[in-house]
Image 1 (cartoon, rainbow, N blue to C red):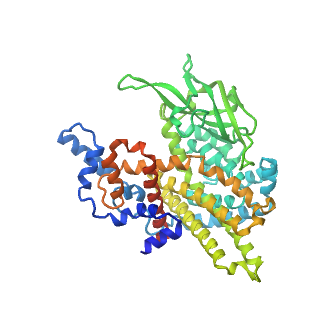
Image 2: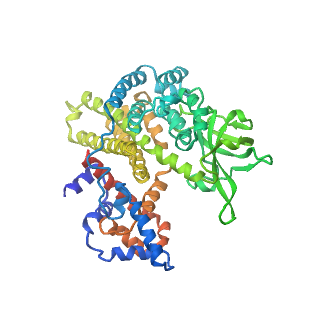
Image 3: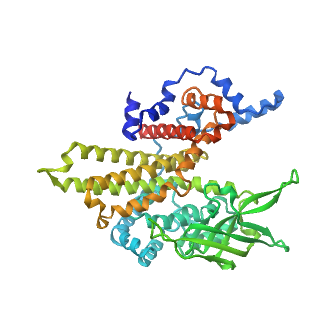
Length: 522
């Protein structure tokens, strides 16, 4: 009962959704055949020699995941990463963070003007210069390369402050370091890091992440931009165009994804595969379109970027030739926790505005904070903010502790945070009434800014499929939460990938269960 109350207090779910989420609690012993049935559905039909099976079983044991979300789909409770709530900063790191929080908060309160940025449709020059002076463009670049060298948890705390004050500035900074040059941090060799990171860390050069194309949004593998090796073998010739690129009109350095023919050295077969390139605007042939007119995050620059016969040196391949899809997914997975941290800050700011209004507004002879309906709104807003914050710092701490499997948790945090922030801001406007609807109150700007967060860096619809399918494909013995997924696998087999309505319900159940766990842990 306590779990049910916690679930319902965290998110207002219709009964059917609760029943789906509760499968892990109710269907514990419904499927005694689960251990045998699931492998039957998922395994290949060909038989294997006992020796091959033994090798595979050993590899499976060696690759046992410590991810709570992965194991949840397996019907196992792996608590190492969630209990107790992780605390990963040492005394020196805590001291550095305390020294940074004050000046950053003061900067956004006294220097940055979110309304002016929104009106100008750009971040004011004074703000940009101030951010560069503070080192905000290189928060996680190692100190020996000119950055602050922050951990993921320290980064999350500062991003939370930015999100509280101005999401347009947050996107400018995030597009630069959370995805723009993140590939160089994750996959760059020493020469690439030494060449590019020092100037990127100071903001002398700005970075952008170039993946989306007119015919390639969520289906990243369908990009049309091409790369072909030059006859001399020293360059790749890049041709194509990208759309809706954050920092696209400002950037000097681009992380670009392009298709090229790659020969399999084992089979000799030639296939089109994605490769990642570090592209400099100075290479020539790189042009940007005018800034896009957008509903929100107007302060951030969004533009088309075109590549025409751009000669990219072979040493600017990022990662392996043909390994671009892996690079893209790792960059996005690695940065999603930052979105939860930023939106946790956004909700804090919005809740503060709602509470201030409720404490000072008098109706029917009474301050409206004394009315039960108002108290319920504020309580629900606080719950959503607390869950989001707990997710962000749980994931950042896991990453700082060396976790390599956090993609499901990160996707869950992005989905939950973007929807929670929207709901909290909507409730704030409702609580403030006509005042909340007015531009001068500043909440309508936050509402406009928030709308994109359910779309970019993986739409919530696609990420729900990502959560469900990534979880289901790890299933081995499913008796608890897996009681639900067991039914789906038995009924649909590999065709489950096409059952999006059902996958959405599986994902929603996983999101709610993870939300409960991080809150209980904290």
